[in-house]
Image 1 (tube, rainbow, N blue to C red):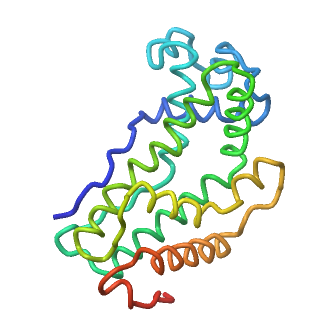
Image 2: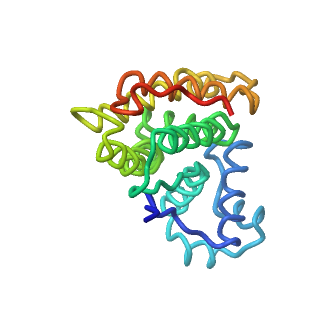
Image 3: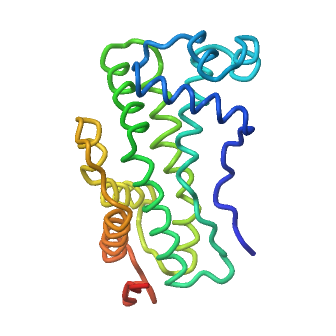
Length: 218
């Protein structure tokens, strides 16, 4: 049976266009945008915004959820999981996550979240924490559980294993982007980073067949 490891947040095509408009305004103007500016950029009415998202915090929450949903979550067949399929699932997630967090949009969103958290201004810091890294941990948990149940991963605490994985994948890429480093890894560079991070993680937490398997070079 193919396990759906996470149900993605679902937005209509039109809603995604509106949320992309919010993200574009954040890149250009920080959090100094108004609901009216969103309406002008997305060619929609205020009534539509409030019907879809409620207040400004609701709009920001949906915007963060939409950006986080761009990290593609791999499916994993729990009845036929193998060392290679688990390795590929972790690698696929790592690549997609790096593509998202090293983007200009994510950097702008994270800068604003840190600013809000430090100043006590608004709820964006808490929104990004809840629907960004904390949600990502919840989304990854089923993959780790499948790996453990199959005897391919071994850990005492799943939260610690996931935090270790996060640290190996993200390293300092996110903070470097937030601090203004213009360059981001190329597609091949991201793949190389992801491959190395997964291999290092499996040296720490791999078990059984996976503990002794080699990373394929396809």
